[in-house]
Amino acid sequence: MRKLLMAALLAGVASAASATVLIPGTGWQSDQVDAANTDSINSPWTFTLTNPGVFRLTDAFIVGDIYTVSGSFNVASTFFAGPAIPLSNPTADAAWLSADFSHILVPLPAGVYSITIQGNGAGGLPAGFFVQLTQVPEPATWAMMIAGFGLVGLGLRRRRQPVVGA
Image (cartoon, helix red, strand yellow):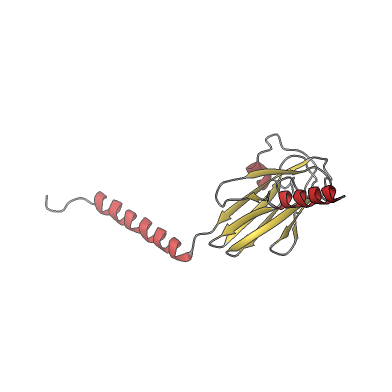
């Protein structure tokens, strides 16, 4: 009995330590749910935002799945609208732009997050999906970028002007 309890405790510690880190700006990451209303393989997803950011999730494989995202923010579910017709090119970007697949966008303030994703498997199991995290630059960074583009534009304009009196 003692060995069984110890094994269960170690299994719990191992699963807690197996969080998947989502890094902002690294593009779409894939995951899947193997049984209806259970955590995805890579859950929990953890990440840190130093600036505000956007978390996205899109189904991209079998039309009809709905996913629930819960954790460090209010629970949110993907929505599905459109006919049950699979795309001929099931990439994450195409799925994100399609009304055939469910998806969600969650704006987030700077902070540390741990989220869990579950799916209902309505389209079939396993139910695959993609997640993406992007970070929004600070307003000061945007101002520096705009000023930099302006200076480049002035430099190009000055270079194109004919020399007077030459």
